[in-house]
Length: 389
Ligand SMILES: [Zn+2]
Image (cartoon, rainbow, N blue to C red):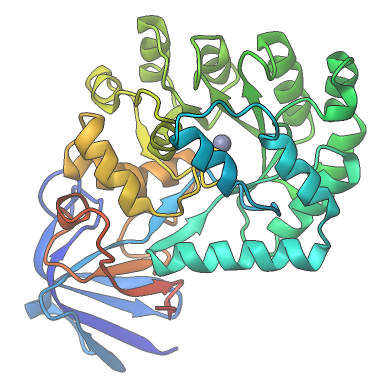
C-alpha cells in the first residue's frame, strides 16, 4: 500500500484532546502519515516516519474534512425568484416547496443524479468529505424511493424524509398521507435509507404524527433524526430525545426544558445557520446549548428553498459572529460534531485508524475560517486518502 507523509503542518486539528491542546487537540509543527484510505500516524513533524510520498504543507493548517450532517440535495428546478422576492421585501405566496416537488417529479433519474453529483463536488471543493442527503421532494412512493436510490450512489448517509410536508395530493387528507409514509412508502424507501426524519412543525407534522412516522421507521431498522423547533416552539426536540434520535436539527426555538433534555441525552443539537440567514430569521443560540452541556453540530441544510449554501466555512463564520460560538467550538461542531450527529467514529478526527478525510487550508490556522469570511481557503482535500482537490 502506498503511504503519504503530509509534513510542515503549521497547525493540525486532530479533535483528540489526548493528542494536543484543548478540545481540538491542536498540534503545531505537525505531520500526518496516510496509508491507503486511513490515517496511520499523527505527531510532531520532527518525529515522523518515512513514507513513499511526501507533501509539504508549508506551515498551513490541516483539519479533518467537514462532516455535513444535514442536506437536501436530490431535487430539480430553481427558486431564485422566490429568494429574490423575499430579500426584496415582497410577499411571496405561490410556489415554495411545491415548485421543487413538481420539478423533481418531472426530472429524469439522470438529471437528478447529475444535479446531486454537482452539489457533492461543490461541497468537496469547499472541504466537506462526508455529506448526508435526504429525500423529501418526491412525496410519492416511486419518487421518494428513486430519490434515495440515487442518493445512495453518492453517500452512505441517506435519510428517508417522505414526511417533509404533506404531499399536495393529500392536502385534504393529512392522516392518509401519514398512513402512506408509514406504510407503502416506507416499504419502498427503507432498503435505500439509513435514517428516518420528519419535519415536526406547525404546517407540517405535529407531535403525534411525527411520533408515528419515526416509530414506523425505527421498526424497519432506520435510526431517527428530526427537523425540530425551527420556526416555532414545539414538541420536536423532546420527541427526538425520547426516541433516542441521533440528532435534533435546527433547535432555533428552545425552552429551558428543551435545552435540558438535549443536554441530558445523546441526541446532538444540529444548528443550521444558513436557514436563518436565507430567511432573515433569528439565529439559534449555540452558546446557550454549549453552556448547558449539549453536544452541538453545525451543518448547511443545503436546499433550494431556505438555505442554498454548501459552504461549511460560511456556517462556521456565522456561528462565530451570530451564535455565540468560539472559532474552536464552531470548527469542532462542523467536524467532530457532525460525526456525532451521524453516529460515525471513523470521520471528524485526525487520529490513527480514522478515515483519511483531510482539509488543508490556505491559511495558518483554522481560526481563519471565521476571521476571513467568504474567502475560498481550500488548498487541498483528501477523501479516504485520495486527493480530490
Ligand atoms: Zn432540512
